[in-house]
Length: 112
Image (cartoon, rainbow, N blue to C red; front, top):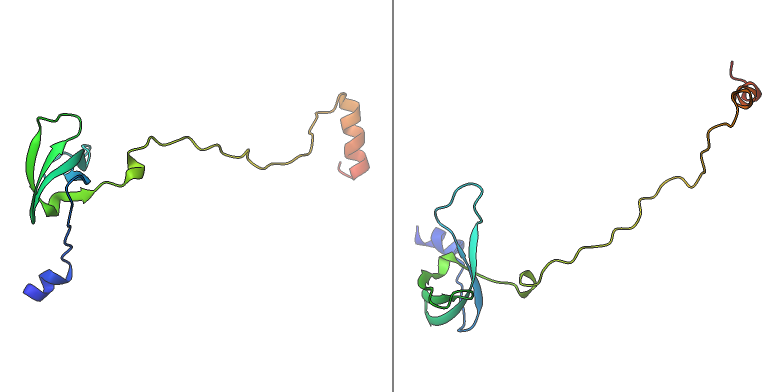
């Protein structure tokens, strides 16, 4: 039984100063999955003391299973990508100027 547990065991070793997210245990369906960002201020594996970046008075002791390392790219706001114009026909489509011209074209093509 211990071998099966150890197969999927993922050990997270965080250093002091690392930025992390905390996984929310109880949440509703539409609530965010993670809370944060937090900064690791003390580490005594497997429990870490973290501090909220926005509110420095908010300190928590959290088990490493609930902590996830924050990628620096998620801290930067997403920039809007410029999409190329959709490809389409370059043919200029103009309606006939006169109904008689339309009928002549249809007769030339062999359509009744």
